[in-house]
Image (cartoon, rainbow, N blue to C red; front, side, top):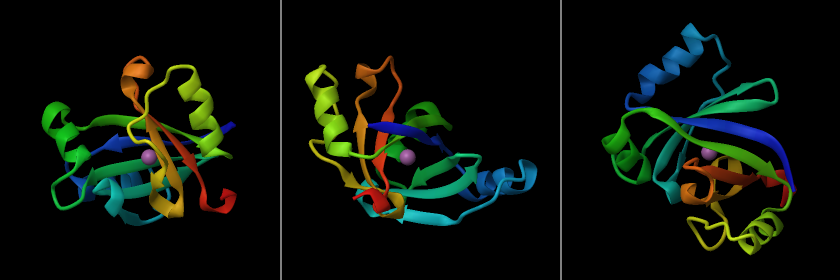
Length: 136
Ligand code: CO
């Protein structure tokens, strides 16, 4: 079951500059950075009232975020719903015809498990389902 808007992710070409913006200009709390090897992405989280902003940047200049930045520059990359049973949500949506970017959940930030719904299945929006570590 989908239970919350876990985060909104923004792809940023200049990671340090964007971290500074969210910390100093917007005054959000900086929770730190985390590299997600499985997604070739480095992330920075800024929790705010029940959700988070996640900045995403290519790890070592490669991976899907590098492709996104090359094609479109910075911008909103995905939104993420929290799930309390990611396999069940995946199966339910697949039955309705939704396509996913991987066949099973992958390791995400904070020891979570994540899977992405293909943007073509959702009006062009990339949607992540995320089951936090404490729920699995
Ligand atoms: Co995310």
